[in-house]
Length: 443
Image (cartoon, rainbow, N blue to C red; front, side, top):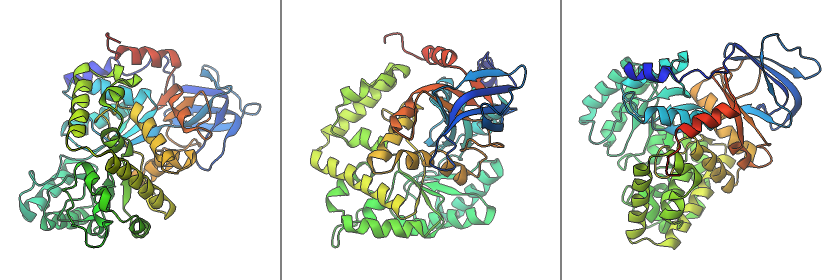
């Protein structure tokens, strides 16, 4: 609680007011692929109250006015695979703020901690500055679960503890996984995460897994006939299996996925950070690295160097990236559901900044900017059953004001002018001031 009180002193921006009005702004509603020009958008009490043409909507007296001329108002983005530190961690304030200040207004925490239950409430009430948080419970994996009976009990305990879903990591036996899946259905809690070797992606799909992270298990399920079915032994997310994947199997597997209710959170930027031929030094020199402690960046550089030192084959690496891009496009084209996720803060993924790189990765895989944006707005809201992800009356006021049109160029999502977080306006100067507070002094 002391940590919450400390963060509370930084929670509400000075520009806070009950009513904020965007005047003459271009609205990107995300209900369809359109831009509605010259609009006035009125935000009251954490909700979008009304939207209409600038000449027709009166501005309430006493409102905070935001000039939207030549700017674009879109829904805030969702990071659907994030790692949130415990409430007692010194890094918590930085992680939450960097997400929010980059237009990430919702996060799905994929490695829950007991303190996250109260943290979720503190964020929602405005005591803590940060994105809306949906949290899993602590990881269920081969080390934390001891048999089917224990698996069932842990599912019941996490449901009773108030977590929103279960997070699965590798190492589960088939019996343990099935016990988790069956009990989760009984008590009404979703389960998501990695696909254990003993389970396989097809069984995970058939068992009602809510989401599969990192495209885990798909390479194994796409191996050529006669290839060793060595799921889990192909290096980082099975990169070493790329040489044995049959590309002709991808479309059928994508269609099979689309026939289920399982979503995919690709975290493609994480994979490319680790696997690509780009040097550790170049990745460590990205502009956003200035907002992370040097010891963290140096750790990421060491991890990348180690990966390149372990019999690195640039041809296999390049093939694995291309195959994953092909899989992402096939999943989309076949109607399988995708979620925007970068796995921040992991290797070279600075919170908030990395979600814009993930958007670019989806476009590089063949999605249009609008289709990529859907994964982090309307798709995320549908998955989480949340009242966000659109710029429409009645929706939650988690918004981003951009300096250019994101539907024309996905890179424009990085041109953040200001944000509305849970109904609170954070202006461009305040945003820059907050970012500056996290910048290293050696930069």
